[in-house]
Length: 162
Image (cartoon, rainbow, N blue to C red):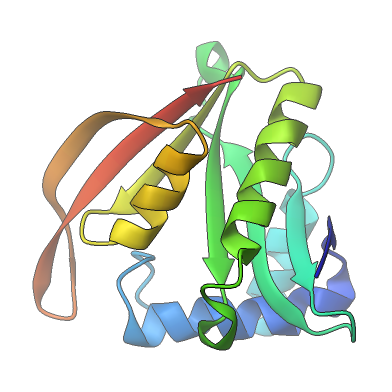
């Protein structure tokens, strides 16, 4: 599995993974699937210091993706980023999430960020465990801040100083 910067050619593969979560899961709080134009705009925002990465299966197919995003818009937060990691259902358990997260943390440090924050739906023990295994520490739980598929959802926040 090759971890590399995402390109516009990866948009549909990323969108397929993400929209599967939008429609059938709770790992994103988006309620409407992304269009091709929205996915391309997202990719355009994720370059430079806030990259998007893909896990390429060797044949050009996207098996997973991850990104760094600004944490908040106010200037004092400029040294903090938020990570996101998604793995296609048929590639989970292969170490792709760890490879993506490890590279995102490395890039965060390389780009001069001080903190990486993860905001994860409370029942996603796999993602919480992945982040803890990569050195993230629990900093809080926001109770029932989201509602999707008729359920109230908590958000667990973890942080790693780089």
